[in-house]
Image (tube, rainbow, N blue to C red):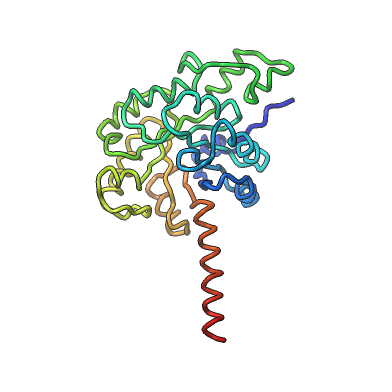
Length: 269
């Protein structure tokens, strides 16, 4: 039996196309499947700020993504080799690692995600990524394939990351860097603005794009508000992977409209 994977995301990225996804906080498969219906490229599945557990809940979310044709990217709890390895063994297309601040931490991410000679990922053939060691399994091909197709995505979300940006980006095996404007702002004690209109935040995103692209590394960033003008601005800036809001945001927007309709009807009664 073929191992379920999503190749569309990587193919688009190799062609230099913009790719679009959404963050999922709810722990439900439903919004992921709906996002797949609407043609989004990746599901940013959060296990850092939510009850979603890599050991207990992640498998169904990864499988829902793959079945919906949307690449699952798992934000793990931190630089934790077990979370990183297990997410990839479940079939995730990549791992997003929060609050990476040093080159040493970046190397730890790569070490957990990539097999030798790039990293030191531990292996077991009894997992989904290895096809449960079904017909035709070969360790060499499996490890080569995982190294070539699984994304390592550290997050740039602190002033320490930018203090060490050159050393971090020189770490072999980093595929994408995800910019986190809220946590960067918190680390600097400046106003939080996901739209990134703050001059310092905008400057840091520009610095990240310039230095990452010079090394062949892609950049991911949120698009808030998720409207056409914001998408265009991020594309012109050079962002490769654009996060179009999240499931909790869209629920809030829907219920806000419902509340407004109720209040409007009450005033007209």
